[in-house]
Image (cartoon, rainbow, N blue to C red):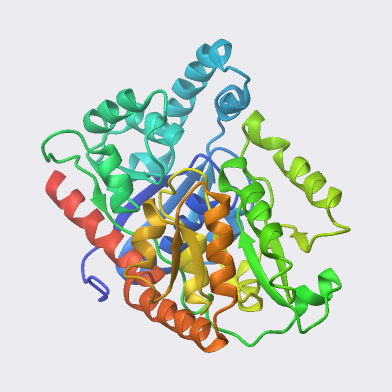
Length: 401
C-alpha cells in the first residue's frame, strides 16, 4: 500500500455521482476526498443536483460542480412499474451525458470514476478517457445479465467494494474488466471508542443504567427492521435491562421505500406500551451513536454488498451481530473475534443469537469490541481504502496511456 506523496503531476480524477445526499456511496467519496491530495489525486466531483455532499467535499478542498439532470432520469426509479417512464429516462440519460461531456472537469480528466448505475451509463456514453465503474451493489435482479455484459463492454475497469460483489459481476474468464476488489473503509479518527455520555438515554427519556442495542440503518424494508423488532420482542423479558434503538431515516427514492419509515413508526407506536423499541431519527454525526451502544445489529434481508455500519461499529469498539452472508461475513472475519454471525432471514435464529450475546459477560463483549477495532485499523481504515483506490487508478490510467 502506497502512502507517499507522488513526485509527479497529480492524477486528475473526475468522479461522477448520481446523488448528492449522504448515503453509503456518497460517504465513500468523502473518504476518498479526505486523502486525495496526500495521495497525489486531483479529485473533482460532478453531481446532478445540490445537496449536503457538496459542502463536505469542499471541506477537503475538492472542486465540485452541478451538471443538471432531468427529473425523468433522476426519478425514474420512483415510477410504479416504470415501463412507461423508460423513454423519458433514456432521453434524460442522453442529455445528461452530453452535458457531462462538455464540462471542463470531464474533458480534462485523466480518469473518470463513476459510483452509481445512472452515472455509469451516462459517463460511458460520453467518455474519451479511461473510465472506471465502482460497483457498490449487486447486478439488478431482473436486468442483471444485461448489466454484466455492459460492465464487460463499456468501462475500462471495474472496482468492487467486496469479494462478494466482485464474484456476482464476474463473467467467464478473467479479462481487463474483471472486478478488482477494493474494500471500503472508515475514518478511524472519527469512528473510535469513546466513553458513554448517555445522550441517547437522555434523548429517549431512559434511565442511565439501561443497556442499548442499536440498529443504525437507512429506513428501507430490505434492511430487516421488522424482523429485528420481532426477534427483540421475543427476548426482551429475559433481557429486562436492555432497550432496542433503531437509528436512521429514509434516503431511497423508490415508491416501495418512501413510505416505509412511516409504516415502521406506526409499528413501533402500536406496541410502545409493552415493548422497549425506540426510533431515533437520522443522525448526521453518526459516530456519536455507536459508543452509546452495547451491541450493534445488522440484519439485511438480502445479501449485503458490503456493510459499512459494521465497519463503523467495529471502529468504535462495539461488537456486532450480523447476518451470515455477503459483505458482513467478509468484514467480521474469523469468528468470534469481532462479533457474531447468525442465519439470515430467520427471526427465531436471530432471537436465539441475541439472547446468547446479551447474556455473555461484559468482559467478553469488550474483548470483541477491541478485536473489531484492531481489525478495522489493519484492514478497513479510510486511509488504506483511499491509498488502494489511488494505486488502482494509477495502474489503470498508466495502462491506458
